[in-house]
Image (cartoon, rainbow, N blue to C red; front, top):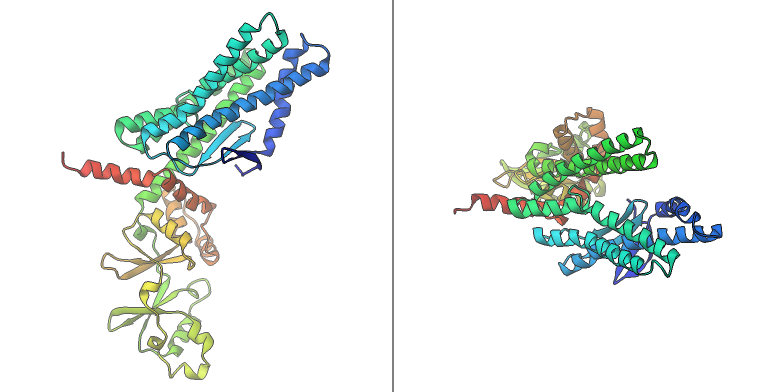
Length: 422
């Protein structure tokens, strides 16, 4: 979902709306208008009340998200923005709260606001029943919508607030955030499937719009839950795979005493796709001593290539961005995004070069874990463009999400706890 249009800020939090929100306003206004048409004259007033009901509904959604946002701020989590769109709203936070109970309080704050609004509006409607019939209908309508909003969001399945609450409870009980996500995701899939089945039954029984709406909500929930599961699987792959499992060997080796002409010949012998951009590492008597780029070949006249040696122009090896071969693959993604080289030197346990890894290597390794094997031409094209293959451009966002949600730290702490003596 894009950023949308920013309207203003509420306590420093940008409020944005998606273009689809305007269509939702029109649709909901059209749906609410018949509920007022029978008791309100003229027709323009019924349309005005329908529009007011819609705006109050989305104001309630905004207050629901503000409940999440304010509780997040109280828990020390920065709120990036609140966005309204056709299916409701979302409060985006910079990172997930590091504690299970903190997450539970943030998730529960939204439904609590909705249920409080519902109670207040329904009580107000009851007290005005004999004095302001039109206002009573309006308050009753919006109050019931808030009641539905609060109760629906409490259903225990991701991506609903109830799913986040369930995740937090399982996390608190088991000590594993990952386990909490797995349980809440499974519950969400069951709920979404039930909604689709119940919607189909209602549609078959002639319920029409209600059945169709329930099916659409179920499909949306199933899709959102599938995205959450895929994200979880990608995170697991990036944590479980080691850099050495993805590494290639995009470097060549020259002895320090070799003339620059030997380096030029080596470049001519390699095709553009195979290794024209390979790093050149320098060794002396079997020991790694540095690396050299192509600048001397560009800057020096050809006549000097035989007089000057590789070691005259080599640079320290530690200037190259590097990563340990035993590091998890998500660290390679993070390091690649921070590097201007677009490639990392892979170091063995002894600190010696034994490979390289770039975005195409990472993408190929991840896809193989997903059961997808790419043809060499696709990998070669991705390597030339220094990109992740087959739409895996989201990998940096997946890693950022892991760090924001502290998934990595959660696993490390869990492993430490399991290894600690009792």
